[in-house]
Length: 323
Ligand SMILES: Cc1ncc(C[n+]2csc(CCOP(=O)(O)OP(=O)(O)O)c2C)c(N)n1
Ligand SMILES: [Mg+2]
Image (cartoon, rainbow, N blue to C red):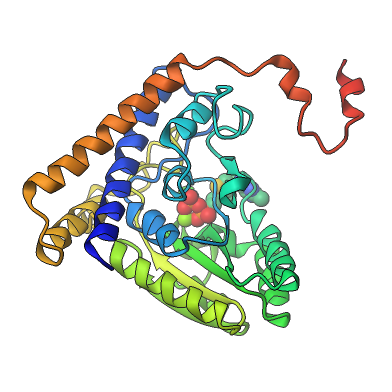
């Protein structure tokens, strides 16, 4: 990783955290409604993975604001989507969990836990038939690995040697349920071992995530078939803004925050890439400024037209049902 990329990763992590705090504040003010899942604490995972998978198709979890921005979707379009505005990346009709931008090969966000995994496998099948070698990345939480769709997807991907990276964000909780209360082991890669090569990485270390995803992606592109990579992370907030996080002790949270990914990467910037304090401060200020502008843009944007409700439907005739 060169200095330019390291600075970009730091920028996106700082931008992501500031963005998430601004989203939380605007949720509390009533500017954002519906569900809101914050990614604070997991920035190294979200940014490191997406930057390493800089081409190809991405199917993400519903906790995807930072991933979308790392893919190049403008922060203002993401914030406007959270506000439900016409200028949002999904035209104000998707909300926080459905940030969708086909021109950037970013297909959400999916509210159905694990529901996007078969979609990603279908996409990988299509890409294999097309001879496209960029690969497909599907990102899901530990909780999604308990569903049937996950196992069916592993089976089909492995049988057909599809070019797909299964990337599991293991933060040890599915909403407020400790992982080991819902499944017999902590490492979810064990579920994929019979089907494909598996790896694990410290998800709180952006450089490690970047390297692990880059190398898995290379293997996929060389035709080795699917790979499962598990990243261990820690989300600082509750599952969504309506979850008070009361199931985790202060001690557990302190332990978590001692591994803060932004602080860690900031040290690396200084030691490894010799960034000065001024350079770092400039990056942080630029990120905050971008978030402020994104909030202003979202606030000043207009709501979608009521008629837009009837666009992008699978079944054209459903217009008549409602009118
Ligand atoms: C099919 C389905 N079942 C249940 C839910 C309710 N639900 C939302 S998030 C979640 C937990 C998912 O766990 P994990 O993927 O680890 O996500 P995290 O809480 O860490 O974000 C559940 C059960 C859902 N959205 N979809
Ligand atoms: Mg989880």
